[in-house]
Image (cartoon, rainbow, N blue to C red; front, side, top):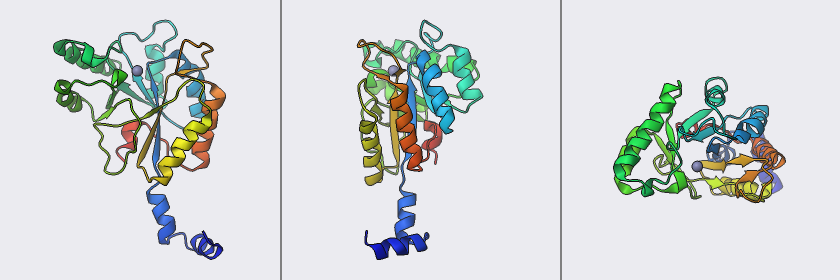
Length: 238
Ligand SMILES: [Zn+2]
């Protein structure tokens, strides 16, 4: 940008260049899958420090098992801190590997379990990204927002029934996520979803563990860019 253009832009914040940049800034959503206890112990305090709220996708049959969040923690995040809790099936089985009747009952019972704990599920994440076509109408009738498992550009108007996300992988530096966010800004995407699973797990066994310092760098970058961070259901309603 030339110096003169920059000068005009700074002087006239209502001018087209400035307002275009404002209008097209993507909203960032941080999702947390599979109720790992480390989400509550490591990620939640950092999210809170930055004033950000996230979306948990939980499997309601296994809540409270070893190294997983319990109901008190999950409900605390939604009811006291404004996080969103979304459905993710009872046990995290891929829906295409279940008999249709079993899959339908599974999805309905999972949502009911969330309701029974005073939660307000509006979003669903497909376990392993799989959804048999016969289930799609039922699922989109039960949930306003469906997140799959691959990453693609999401522009206005958003297709709330087929959302993508970038899943953080063990060993990634924060630069990989920062570049994804930067690309979303340059491409004028409406929504960027960054997904996490475990935190601070020192084991080669897991491909999805994010160190707290890396997570903090990602949140700091998002904040420094001035991007809005919201739970999924709120982000897609903007
Ligand atoms: Zn999952």
